[in-house]
Length: 298
Image 1 (cartoon, rainbow, N blue to C red):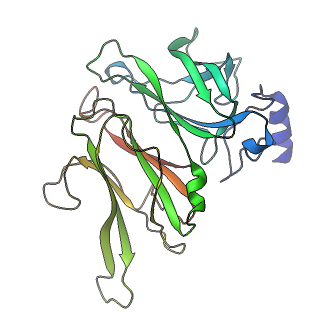
Image 2 (cartoon, helix red, strand yellow):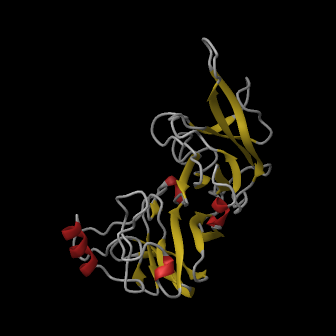
Image 3 (tube, rainbow, N blue to C red):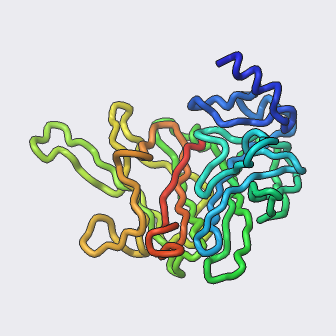
């Protein structure tokens, strides 16, 4: 692994002398820096492609800061590639190190020639953490207009009580109903000494009436799952006012508490939950439907 790393490190185009590549470890980004503290004037940015394409035709993108590509390694031969709809960079727990201040940001499709979907600025402060979503106008607006939605990631909350997990919820569904959506986190816990039905299900937190670009960038504390417990939390995205687990409740999207992508909040960790897609789906009722995603900030 060290030999491969040395080859890659010498060949990639740097940002501040270093371009981050995707991690193959939980908290290691394969740069010489473990955090922005080792780089003067650096900020930390997580990039998420959450923009549904025209008529549901999704597209890949690449990000450029002051003309330098920042998501992955430049490819000079063959078909160019980019981040697909729903992708994050970097993954799974890392941030890209970028020069702080205001820089020109260009988001382009990897076609030949490339087509720009967004031209603007990325503004950051040294030492701070951010998540930057690429979003689109509602499907009723044609042609689609793309923009970025950037939020602050204050990870210091994890220092308040390391027995808790910390979460927030962000909605980037552009045609969210006026009333917004509710999002509930549902936990299953064992009851000591119980016979037969030994599982208790309860909703530990509910976000209510969250509209497009709504939610709160601040993280809140929730009960962490015990370290020996491999059951996750179920996450439900619901129509506003619908209660959890009752007949007739309208669940728009659901993240199960087992299987692929299970959400198991651990003590001392910080997480962002978000929903993307299009209400009703595009181009039909099964494509680009609302989906729940999440990532570990710390």
